[in-house]
Amino acid sequence: MTVIPIRKLGDPVLRERAVPVTDFDAELAALVGDLRETLTDSAGAGLAAPQLGVGLRVFVWSPKLTDDGGPDHLVNPVVDFPDEEEQDGLEGCLSIPGVYLDTVRRMNVVAKGFTVKGDPIQVVGDGILARCIQHETDHLDGVLFIDRLTSAQRERWMATLRAAAWYDENSMMGIKQSPHR
Image 1 (cartoon, rainbow, N blue to C red):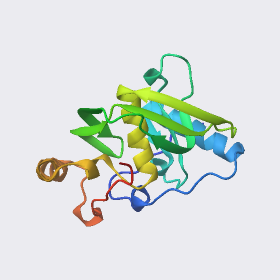
Image 2: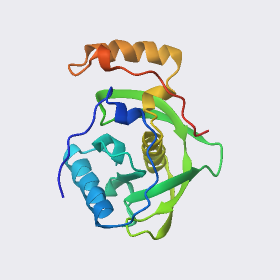
Image 3: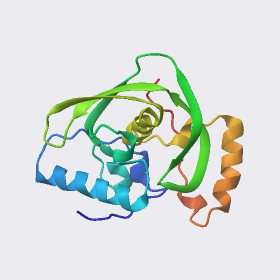
């Protein structure tokens, strides 16, 4: 497994909708391994394949988010929400380093998909795991957490962003709307 450089805001792959995985093979297993290794190295909560420049619908999350030794990845996830309860809290992104903003997400999530071996799986999460699954699923749709900001939040964020050492105004792309309710 290899630590891969994480793509940053402005990289076009972060704004593209990832395609479904069709081959559950050694190449997919290697990708999941690279995602795990890169996530561990970066000390993040989750990481999606587009953040490594791979346009496939797969992501991993930190095993620290689940204490039951359960799965730590989903392939071709489909997300549903069992209720309307929301959570509001700080959220960050490895592709937008150093920026943490209040972001509203659903409190509870049910995600269905597949393991790296192609076995069907369902993950039920709340709190931080639910936030992570929603965040990473957004990545698979080309949506970043900054797209969920209010106008006032966006203005404050832009000031913070312009001050970031890695910011490049020429590579900025427009705000997208999440397809998830």
